[in-house]
Amino acid sequence: MYKLVEADWPEIRLMMVNGRSREAIAGDYEATVEHLDQFIAARLRRHEPGEARALSSVGSA
Image 1 (cartoon, helix red, strand yellow):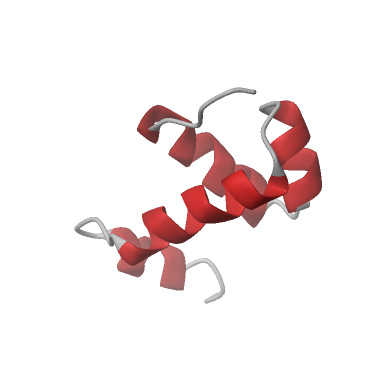
Image 2 (tube, rainbow, N blue to C red):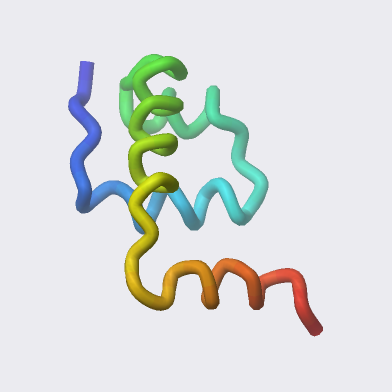
C-alpha cells in the first residue's frame, strides 16, 4: 500500500475538484479509501494561507 504524502495533496485536491470519486483516487494511489479519507481530513483541518480564498472563488462567476 502506498503511503500518501504532503506532495500528493495538490493533485488529489485537483482530482476531487474535477469530480473524481474517492474510490477512484484511492485506486490511483493504491491506498484504501479509509486512508485517503484520513489524509484529506488532515489537510482540510490545516488551512494554508490563501487556500480558503482560492477554494471559495471556484464557485463564483
